[in-house]
Image (cartoon, rainbow, N blue to C red; front, side, top):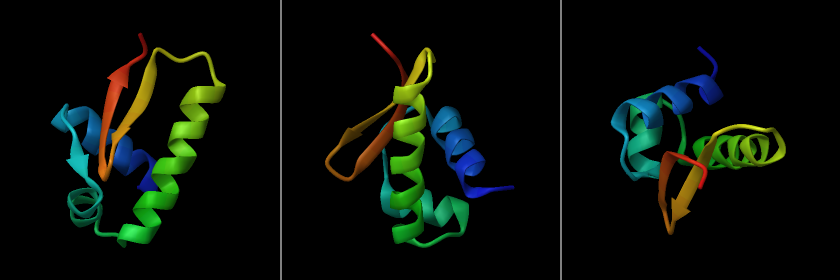
Length: 67
């Protein structure tokens, strides 16, 4: 499974803020690759008419509903 889909699935399943390191561990990927992919996902959600968004607090990320 491609990393983007893995990260979406992990964030959806956990339903809480998750560190980049924890995401990298769950996805069997590097921290750098996870950060790059999360930034791509954030841009995708911002550019399309989606009810979802990726929130970031420092080094933590969460899949959430747009307000």
